[in-house]
Amino acid sequence: MPKQSTKMSGLQCLASENIWFDKRCYDEAEKCFYEGANGPSTQAKSALQQPKGSQLKRRHRNSSSRAGDQELVSRMKSLELENQTLHKVVEEMRAALQKLESRVAGLEKSPAAVTCAKAAPVKQVKVENGDDDDDDDVDLFGSDDDDEEAERIKQERLDAYAAKKSKKPTLIAKSSILLDVKPWDDETDMGKLEECVRSVQMDGLLWGASKLLPVGYGIKKLQINCVVEDDKVGTDILEEEITKFEDYIQSIDVAAFNKI
Image 1 (cartoon, rainbow, N blue to C red):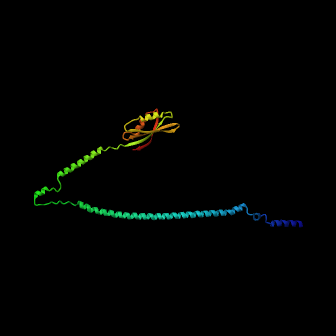
Image 2 (cartoon, rainbow, N blue to C red; image 1 turned 135 degrees about the horizontal axis):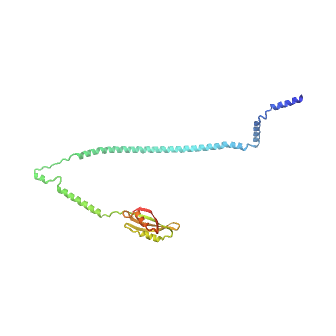
C-alpha cells in the first residue's frame, strides 16, 4: 500500500506541473537570456535599423515637399506679376480705343459741314456795266477754243507716254537649272556623254559649267548648269531632248531650279 500511494502522489505532482503546456513562454525566456548574454541577433538589429531608414525617407519626403511648395509659391508670384502686367496693357488699350472712338466721332461730324458746303449751289454773278458791248467781250466761263487746246495738249502727252513705254525693253523671265545626268555604267564615256548633252541647242537655252561627281561603284554622273528663258524652254522639253541619247544617258534629274 505505501508503494502504491507513493506512485500516485508522483503522478499527481506531474499532473499539477504545467511546464509542457507553457513551452513557448520558456523558449522565449531562454531566447531573451542568450540575447542578453551575446547581444541581439541580426534580425533584431535589422528590425532596429528599419525605423532609421523610415525616418530618412520621411525627411527626404519632407524636403521634397518643401521644395515643391517653394516652386509653387514662386510660380504663383510670377503669375501674379504677369496678371498685373496684362491688366495694365488692357487698360492702356482701352484708353487708346476711347481716344480713337472720340476722334472718329469728331471726324464723322466734320465731313457733314464740308459736304453741305459742297452741295450748296454756286451763284453766278453777272457784272453789269453801262455798255452792253463790253459784257459780250468778257467770257467768264471760258470758250470752246480753250477746251480744244486742253484736249490737244492732253492727247500729245498721252502719245508721248505711249511712245516712251514702247521703247522700254520688256523683262524676260529666266531660270537657272542644275541637271544631274546619269550614265548606264562605269564604262560609259563621260566626255562623249557631255558632248551629247551640249549638242542640244534651242532658242532660249544657254549651257554653263559642268563637273563629274562620284555616285558609287566607280560610276560618276555629269552635273551641268544651264540658263533658259521660261517662255521658250521648259524642263520637260529639255529632258526629252537629252534622253534621246539612249546609248550614253540612263536618266536625268533636276538638282536645282532657281528664278533669275
